[in-house]
Image 1 (cartoon, rainbow, N blue to C red):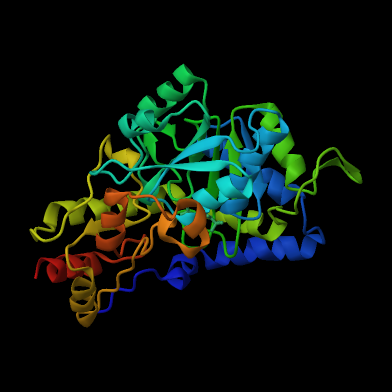
Image 2: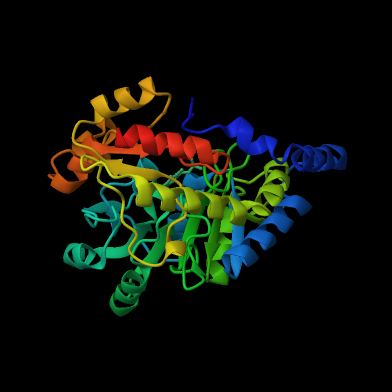
Length: 367
Ligand SMILES: *Cc1c(COP(=O)(O)O)cnc(C)c1O
């Protein structure tokens, strides 16, 4: 039996008729940039997240960059300010900080959840740190009650990187509503995936929403009038129309991911395989990735692939060990982050996996 790591064709094939109808509607409309589809998706997504504002962007990285950029334009951050961020994140979180000429302050994660915790975060808060970028890594909410409280107490801005955590919640309070702002990615493989690049910002403050709305469109609030300098980072009509279809199915997809993860956590019983832990309620993790730790990763992956189980690594190189950051971050010693990057491996989890495939993964891992 083959278990692909991710079968995007199968994921979208389930909704082929709806997706094709949505694409045809855009093609026939003659309106392709910033029209009714983007507006409708922004309003649908804001309502689903439970956030007062949503601004569609070209991708998740641009949503992260523009959130911080918006705060700079509004005078809340300035060049050189520190932004605390987990050290074991996807490179995009760090890029958003450095692209804005802000300084990433790397914080070791919580050992059990791989996520930012309030304790180590508190230790990292020097006076020049003005914002926190919390990443809901692998789909699990970071410790947001404590982190949000800490940010309120210290007067820090709080940005969530929710690129992997669409729908993760604690008592119904979803990723994207804990911080002052949040960035989502709709990269095709994400829990809510477009059929190309797409992203969005959600935020609490109307002024930031208005600023990012301008920033994503050359800094223009009004056609041919530019209040600030901005890039072209717009969400396009076609992806917005496709995302409106996918949004109708995200809750069912997340529930399927949670059922698969629950089985893995119940039935994988190999002492060499360290399972991920879930800190809060089941809804707090939407299992974008099911990440285990193993001492000999290469051998483990090889044995699995021989039995048809395809795995992936998120991520093989820690951001501070990337060539891109050799000069600014390369000197840092972050033992837990470095161990995680050596030992983590992601098992397949996707809404189109069959029960038989799930059972096969469990049997192979246990063997
Ligand atoms: C995917 C991802 C991003 C970037 O999103 P893109 O849409 O690919 O630009 C940012 N942060 C995290 C944690 C991600 O997983």
